[in-house]
Amino acid sequence: MIPRHKRVGSLLQWFDRSQRVLPWRENKDPYRIWVSEIMLQQTTVKTVLPYYERFLKKFPTLESLAKSSLDKVLVAWSGLGYYSRGRNLHKAAEILVKEYNGKFPRDVQELQKLPGIGRYTAGAVASIAFDEKVPLLDGNVIRVLTRLYALRGDPRKNPLLEELWGKADSLLPQKRCGDHNQALMELGATVCLPREPLCLLCPLNDSCEGNRLGIARELPQKVKKSYHKRYRLITLIENNGRYLIARKSAKKLMGRLWEFPSFDLKNERIPDSLSRIVEKVLGIRVKNATLIGKISHAIMNERFVVPVMKCKVVRLRRTTPTQQFYTGFRWIDPKKLAEYPTSSVNRKALGLL
Ligand code: SF4
Image (cartoon, rainbow, N blue to C red; front, top):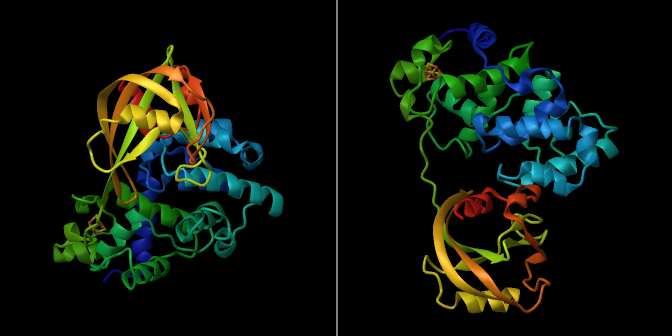
């Protein structure tokens, strides 16, 4: 077995040669690193890049983010998904400015007291921004480590999860811990690929147990996820070229976001009584209800099938919201939807028009 310091050395040399140029690597500003780490949770680098550039332009500093309204932050986040990340980012910025004098703590325990910062993000900010000697474990690092040590089991659960944190910790060098952590993530993202690990190009190949045993492709072990299927109908209600959008209550999933009014369905079948439901719930009589398409999307372990109907207003009975999960209504020019915090599903629904 190759000694630990040699492995670490070759990994860092590889990182110096091969790392991708990414905007959050331009400097060690903890604010920029934190924003990138939150955006990169559940989202690919390619998707994050344009959002990150736009977000940093709008909120170049921690203070500017803390001072902004939550709505503006959610507009900047629109389309990126998992909106609690945007809400937590804003809340954490306010706390950092008020209680920490606008400075990020270096300590991982202290960082984890902030909303939206768990063990992984705390490790990333502390090591990359402050070079603290702390490990981190994301999906890419988990793949590299399970292969490097040929570890079987469910990596999302203990005992393997804790063992992986221990392995990540034991590999940390004395210096350049942030670069070392980034190198492990980069290796997982560009070389130790999920289906086809490029072992010939890997700086760790002569000490990799998974490679030696020929089982790298099988690791980490796949664990079957169970999904719930759900059905929801989106209605695009038109009145003289304007469309109705409604704001969800802060307490609901995707709270405070605007959407085209939507309703849960029992199954894929659209009820014959759609016009009656719309009138009862929204106080609007509609006609010409037509199915214009269907969208599929997933949130966590839920798979949504979303038929989209368009219809025209016949008569407005009332204009105030009555549905318990809506707190406001607006009739908008569809081109203005981008000015409202809204989810990508609603943009897709509008695209069907
Ligand atoms: Fe991954 Fe292959 Fe490198 Fe092992 S040798 S860490 S399996 S790329």
